[in-house]
Length: 181
Image (cartoon, rainbow, N blue to C red; front, top):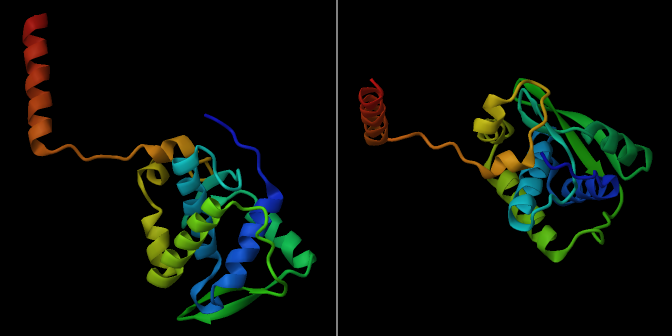
């Protein structure tokens, strides 16, 4: 498994940018986590390296950046973001309010395209519960809680074999068993 070095300034800038650009009503911590995950995975798929180098782990609501809380604390301390709890139905969600202009100079144009496209799709089309469920793919399902989710594994998609393929495989096994006996 290839390890990438965490680029904390880039992670913080990405978090700050997303929080500054998307309405608080459409962005909470769950969606923020998924924007980070899907952006890093898309960059890994397209360029061979994630945007932030962050390590993601399996949590109840999907992949979560290992350093999200540390990055948020630093952004709060630097007076770039504040956090508040906002009621949503019978729950409460974390909302982030940007207090300063985000610095996007660390990102390439291609990275910005991935970030903007991912954030827009998630914020405009999914609830937190929906995007959380969507992130529960085969990689997430096969990992243990708190286990690292390797970028390499995101390139492999689980394919359910067709009934015809299963029947063929069974016939091949039977044939092989008959030859062996």
